[in-house]
Length: 103
Image: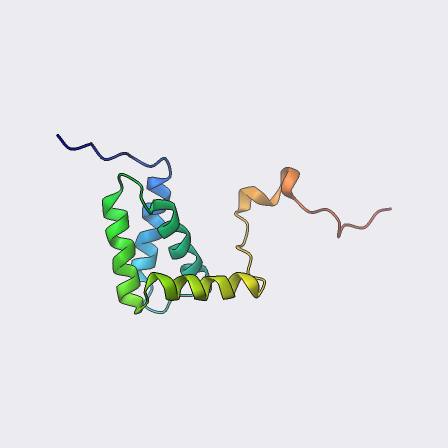
């Protein structure tokens, strides 16, 4: 008997990202970073085969292989790229208050 596929806890949000990537004809830096991140997350994962297949399709649509994607995303990060924080991350302990004036 074969082992059943596992469900990744981030599957639902990752599915939305992969759907967005499939629709991107010209990938932006954030698209390339997301694709690389998700390829790494699901590499060797015993499940989410539809996501893994769609990520491979994304690379084919963009005319990239994994090595080229990794090279490009490494250059993006080295050039100072940082993802924009989600609105929920803009407050609380991660919020930078160093630019606020004091009275």
